Length: 328
Ligand SMILES: NC(=O)c1ccc[n+]([C@@H]2O[C@H](COP(=O)([O-])OP(=O)(O)OC[C@H]3O[C@@H](n4cnc5c(N)ncnc54)[C@H](O)[C@@H]3O)[C@@H](O)[C@H]2O)c1
Image (cartoon, rainbow, N blue to C red; front, side, top):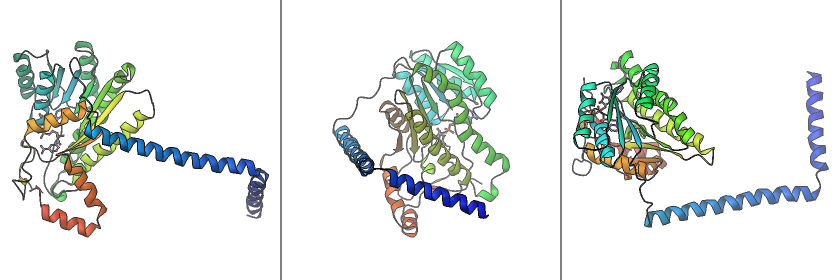
C-alpha cells in the first residue's frame, strides 16, 4: 500500500516535471494546433452544410443501375417483388431469394416475360447462415458478383410481448437481423475486391420509435438501423472505399405484413402502396442516401419530437395514434 502510494507520487512528480520541461514555445504550438483543428472543423462543417443546400437546389443525378447484379431477399412478395420488377425494368440483372419458391418464381418469370435482362430465382432461407453461404456461392458461379444487395425479407409477429412465443421472438431476430449479417458477410468481400457495391437494408418506422404489439419487431428494426450506421462507419474508415449503404425506414405499407393497421388520419397518412415504396427505395439507393424514411418527413418529425420532454412527446404520439392492433 505504502509502495503503491510512493509509486503514484513519483508518477505525478514525473508528469509535473515533464510539463515544466516543455518550453513556452512548445506549449504555444500545442494550443495553436488545437485552435487550428477547431477552425478546420468549422470550415468542414460549413462546407458540408453549404453542399447540402446546393444539393437541395441542384440534386445529384441518380446512379444508373443498368448492368448491376441486384440481389433482393424476399423477392416473392410485397416490396421485394416491386423492387425486383423496378430494378429489372431499369436494366439490372435481378436475383430473387425467398423461402416461398412459388411466389419467387412468379416474380422472376414476370420479369423474364417482360423481356428485361434475364432474372434468376433461388430458394434461400436467409436466417440460415450455411444456406446463405451455399446459395451465395451458386449465385456467384451462375450469375456473377452481386453489386447491389437489398436485405428486404422480414417477418412481423404482432401481439403483446407476453404472448409472443420463444420461436416467434427467435425467428424475428434471425430473419430481420442476423440474416443481414450473413448476407453482408457473403457478398461484401467481392464488393470490396471490386471496390464497387451498395448494401440496402429495410428497417421500418418501427426502427425509429417503439410501438405496442411489436416489442421484438421494433427491437429487430432498431438493430438494423444500428448495424447499417456501424457498417457505413466501418466502410468510411477507408477513404478510397466506394461501397455505399442505405437504410430505409418505411411507414406502413399495404402488403399484408401489417395485418391490423391502426391509422387515425387515414387521408393524411394512408398506408403506402408497395410500388410507391419500392420507387422511393430505389431512388434513395441511386442517390446514395444513407438513412431515408418513407415518407421523407417521418425521420425529421421523429428527430424533432425526440428533442421534446418525454411526456410532451407522448402527447404527440397519442395524438397521431397510429400503429398496429394485435393479430391474435
Ligand atoms: N409492410 C410494411 O408495412 C412495412 C413497413 C416498414 C418496413 N417493412 C419491412 O420491409 C420488408 C418487406 O416487407 P413486406 O411488407 O414487403 O413483406 P412481405 O411479407 O410482403 O414479403 C416478405 C417476403 O420475405 C420472404 N421471407 C420471409 N422470411 C424469409 C426467410 N427466412 N428467407 C427468405 N425470405 C423470407 C417472404 O416469403 C415474403 O416473400 C420487411 O423487412 C419489413 O419488415 C414493412
